[in-house]
Each structure stands twice: as structure tokens, then as C-alpha cells.
Length: 131
Image 1 (cartoon, rainbow, N blue to C red):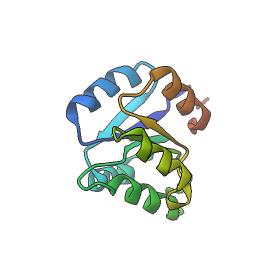
Image 2: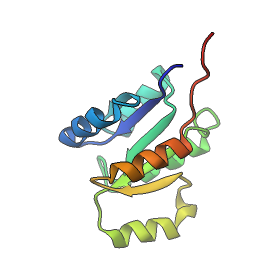
Image 3: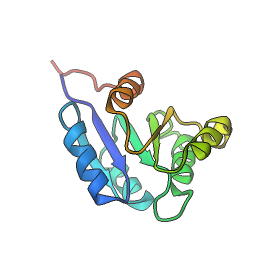
Image 4: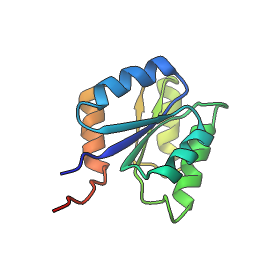
């Protein structure tokens, strides 16, 4: 069975390296540093799930990218889990304002990996097995 692919979109290279080290034990991983790079990556290879930082080049870029992906029929079905290092008040407000952007979940940075893996497994679209 093919391993699912996760696209990690984050502008912090140290965080990306750490997350890739952990995620690559279970999944194929790709990374992008901003929304533009993420869109280019999506053209090349559709991931099974996206882990998306809230604040990239500008404070709401992650939300804007998620909203655009969810509106596009080509990418609307890709599950998106948002990651944020912003304080818990902002995280709670984000959950309450889910109508702003319809994503599958929010996790703080650094994530609790047990909880994050549980969320990934709940939402990931697994590729069909070949054979």
C-alpha cells in the first residue's frame, strides 16, 4: 500500500525540518514555505492532507490559502489542518469563526504529536492501493 503524502506549509525551516523528521516515519512529506510555493507544489503532486501554518508571508496567508483551496473544485477535497503558534485566545476565536475558513482542524505549535497523528489519521485521504 502506498504511503499517504502530507504537504507541510510553513515558513520556519527549523520547524519544517523537525516536523518532517517526525512525519516521515509514517507518511511521505513535501514542504512549501508560503502560499505561492504550496500552490506550485499542488500542481505537481496532489497531497492526501495539508498541514498549513496560519501566519506565513503575512498574518492571514494560511487562512487565505485554505479558503482558496476549499473554494476550488480541484482542491476542495484535500483535508487541511491548520497549525498556529499564536496564543490560545486566537485559536479559540478561530474555531468559533469556522465559517471564515472551513478546515478539518486546528493545532497549536509545537503540536502534541499523539493528538496531531490522531487528527491526521481521522482526516487523511489514503491513496488507493495498486495491485
